[in-house]
Image (cartoon, rainbow, N blue to C red; front, side):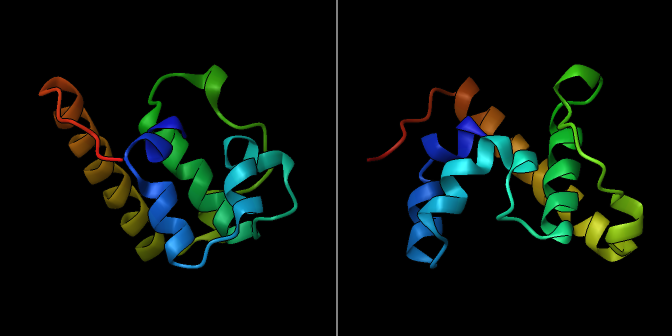
Length: 100
């Protein structure tokens, strides 16, 4: 979750009305009461897509992605994460400057 804070996503989230409390606990979202079951499923899916093959970094949660999200929601979250990860990798590889 360090990339969103580096790329200005935190600033954008605050501007869109997200609470500072939820953003502050985002790196340990599975330990928080701030996120709904659907949000937890989306966050877990995002981590799994981002950290493929790294079983030890998966959040320790009991949320069942397939039972919580519809197939369309799973597809939407997956594609959003793929696009974000792709753009982040391009920005890192090209040394794209991050604005204030």
